[in-house]
Image (cartoon, rainbow, N blue to C red; front, side):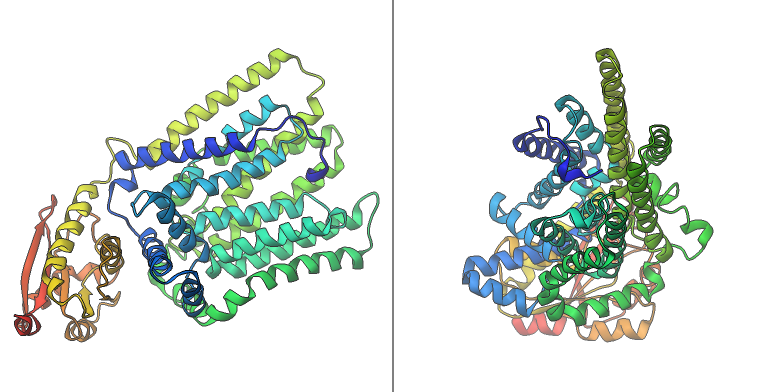
Length: 543
């Protein structure tokens, strides 16, 4: 299947795709604000990119475009895509907590654009059906509700791999290869810490494209096809090289820290992690029953291709399946505690099914009656409604709304207001805060709150995952304030980290310090409390 050269029928308009993306995003966001993760205070990793995006926007507002560009060079963002998308969202919609999530409609639009591209040979009726089918899985809804680079990076990587596999590279024009290079570069710039995985997928998919070129009826020479693939690879590298050159040290330290620590590992047991993204804890959450729908569809399509003797389609489907398996194996091998690491796997799985459906549709399009298509549309509509119901249940339901939603909002606001009031008299001085636990109450959140109010208060946050009491004391000595909590926060604090498991011990240490005094306590529905302490000597000096 040579997708770019397929005969074009009337295609769904770009305006319809934009409208569908925005409506889908608004539905997802409003539902989540009522029953899902958005009913809590902004959590990790969203708050990191909210804060960074707002920081860059303030620089642009106050100092202009040249200072913003200089800041991006001197202090490269962890994810250029997420940071700049957050900044753009705040600039367009105002500094509102929902703005970046609405901006995620642009990511959904990119997915729908590819689906439209794949289905361009089908009737308008069939295209609309498959667009709705593509929106059904929960991992698509999560792409709206999670403002972190994992899901967009997975989508962009899946788009690039799909385009590379489904077209022999010898049949491409320079602008086609430039476009493909830009998509690969976008994936590399969206989640730079996953660059090794993206490069491996890039090499594998381009290699398959070279193979298709050499085995096509009008086969190209191996050297010619390889040179075109190398050209595509080099253009991608050139596009991302300035960023990686400026930020290489940070990226290598981050990856080394994340992969070298057991804190971030969900399981090293192959019996657990083998199924983690399939029927395990993360697969049930993001893929659900679509695992069986997609797998059965691919087997069915493969059988039909063999029946109709569509050799090229069999070859492409086989290449896509290999890419899907690679995209599944990489995060499975790592066993990290992140459900979104397999985003490329989920999206590529979806695109493979749609590809197979289009090819089968072309094979039987002239052999079925109008009644058949009416029945087919009805069946897919039922699947979409049931799947959307399943997706909303996965987000949450009235019975399973996060119990810590109200507590997280109450604690973060009350502690922040007390902190803001106490340091108002010394706003020109930087402040250091030690957090005995991380979670929904953290330094990134408080920094973001100050920036929303356009208050230039330098907050330095200290936290350690370690259970070493000497390290706690060292951080206490450096701090002006302490944010501490009792154990049993019900999810407001992350009590799974080593230091989070010893909150009673850290609380006792803080209470034993005569140089700190409690200035605020907030009781939660669980019976536990959050506290804000300040150093007495510094407060007295101000008074």
